[in-house]
Image 1 (cartoon, rainbow, N blue to C red):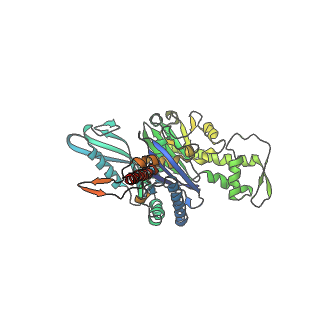
Image 2 (image 1 turned 90 degrees about the horizontal axis):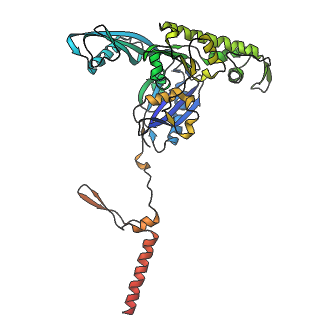
Image 3 (image 1 turned 135 degrees about the vertical axis):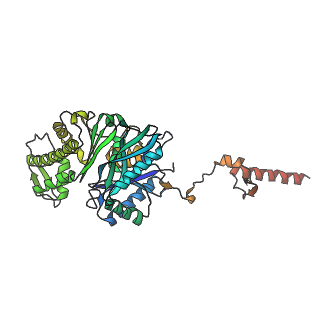
Length: 443
């Protein structure tokens, strides 16, 4: 397999590179996942240190190429997310002189007009159609419908231009890799985690990351709201640092002993610090710190759902949660308490997305990166011309081959040099020569 899609996710906690291909049925197969932990070089979706991010990307590129050899990475897809990513409502209207059949060209022109309406101070990542009103009738798809007036409704996904500019500095300028496409991470994640039925019934996708929490609301298979909150798992870690711990110690304690809800232990925990000193941590105090910040984040998620204008009771498919920070113990339970009338579940990739055996066990730990891979369409690799592997046939087959092979190319014939013969061919020649010499002696 030499045709691979390659994608990079530049997260606040780690940078991930993935490679995969589509099988004969068009299903995605993940071939390789490589990641490097990164702190403070990407913040809230924006590259902060170009040199360090470039070094990580270059290292991951080499690791991926070792896994998919002899293919070499020629271009990549890149995810865009972070604090400044949001969805703006836009409406574009058009009238026809007479009753007309609406075609793809009409719809494309409406989308271009929507893009032209947006401020040049923002970077437009995507234009998502949310429906049409044709002669007063609501239509999900406008193509093929007849009418004299059309009103197109869109969600324009925008971000700060600096996000894409800094990505270009790392990948295009430093790594010398063309970008096959920029993909909105939140939209791509919804495509691989949510089913069409869930988006039709109404649901909320919450991506609880290291420094941001992205909330996406869907109803009638349409994006209703997309907003990124400036808070994530690291806010909880920084609060734990108030217990006189450095960042790494607080992060370790959060993962090992932190609970967002359900604390019922009276025992404290003894933590070994980096300087080999020991400190006793009051678990009740730790739990109160973690729970307080978790409740604040969940309250902000609830506020975004209210902003969407859809009642929680109408989002019957419930809340789906992804993101490494959502693995904090008790966090899902706290969500269930806050949204008592809604189902809450941890998100996972659709079953049709497969992975090679080495990556199968951790495939759901890299949902966002694999979502970018799934959104990619183009082959991102090339195979060097001198990497062709020539396999010689077995000795028995060599013995049966002709000494001279003629290759026909067009109208010309080209003779190759005699191929090296096998052991049986050599013995045959010697035996024949001995017989001829014997006959000469008799004569």
